[in-house]
Picture (cartoon, one colour):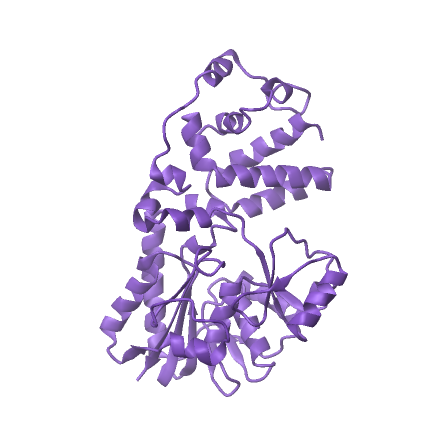
Length: 403
């Protein structure tokens, strides 16, 4: 593809992504599937350019003084010779109009407001108010994997033999990390089930769930099943893990992953019966996903105050279900990939105020019993992970014991 054609593809993708209806990943993948004639180098250029623009969407929109996708692209390309891109060939973006050429002469010299500098929607910035954290969440994420067989050193050596370079993660004893872009499509170790993609914070949540083979355990909002599969690995395939999710497609996807990873001790349930009581009721709660913006920077623009209120209601309701089906002496493990207090501490404190028999389990003691790395937080009731403090996605973790 010529450069002009590459940018036409970028423009088409941005026009769809900036409608803020569907995840950018899904849109990009569908676009490329329909255009198999686009070569790998062109795909990479187009995809990387789209993600760069998404990560700088607020600044580019501010500089352009418009949310028009074409003007945003022109602003991104302001140091290029635009006549070599716009109108240059059959597959190029349309030529610049006289009005656009005049518009380009007037640059916005205003200082970025704080929310624009943070690349965060204003309503969310007013909730978070942490510039350093927000900037860290706008950087690309590392490639984190966990081992699923053998020892970590042997897996790292095997991957090195395939030309993939990883190092041990800082906190998780089963994690490995690469700062480079990694493609596992042709990776033998991946196909053989030796490794699985999982952020280090998610690995740690599985470790700290402290599940033993003799426990009756349910992962109630299991989603894509990452933590369930990790818990199975930690249990060495013993015992049984019940899994539930309202999204049946996710449950089907878990089966494929479980087969590749040789996991046989999970069982899908449609819900919890009245007489079901669990030693570990894991609530991987549906949430805003604000802690995963490194991987999905477009998601911040699809979140709305109304959606957040719906999530808060769902979180509260799921905790009530967990309470009703947790044994005396059992634990509710509450996890989100959110950095918002109203999905984390505030939800838990409100829940505890309704149930005085629910007490915090000391997380520092739990951590020290399971992990060799130093405890990364000050608070012993709530664990918060982030790119700033732990070099991971933003995660929240707490454990409540039913007295």
